[in-house]
Image (tube, rainbow, N blue to C red; front, side):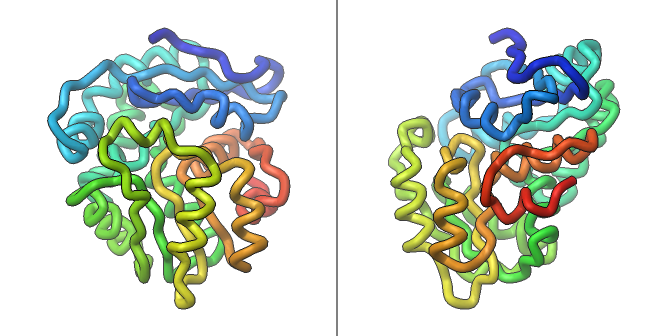
Length: 246
């Protein structure tokens, strides 16, 4: 799958590497302002037997060499690896290693979804988290461990209840909204929706209003951090994170 341009090349240029099976291009596009060009490219396909093997293989730094190098050659000022579990599976040190590898492959500024998420959660003042996710065991526990290793307290961990990895792309926003409302916890001061394959753009402001607390999604946090890296602001009306600007 070749590179795709998701914005008009008028001012700044950012790049995104997504996993080979990513199909939420239109969801990502909604956060990108018209003043920023965003080039999307993909990893090579990997074989796997279960969720853990999939994210572990997609989390190997070497897998990013070709797509990051291509984005750098195309002039991307900052590059994001748009994959949550792939960037938290090896913990905080593994996330750091991915960013270091991306810079080694030519990215002027490098970030991952998991790193963007922790930055976004800190930006909204979160400490205690309720988390909604689509993963099977033990990937869900790796997510909790990554967040706790980043200084957060996970007070609730709620699965979407999917039967297979591929089912994540059949989830609609109403399913996400319902699961988040059910997965909230009175002690949580923010809620995190993990996985860039989940649609959240329209749901976020409704959830924040209903729950009375910040709600951060993986794809939202990635767009926010990536655009902030080039001095731009993600587009998302009534989303608390985005009201803070770059």
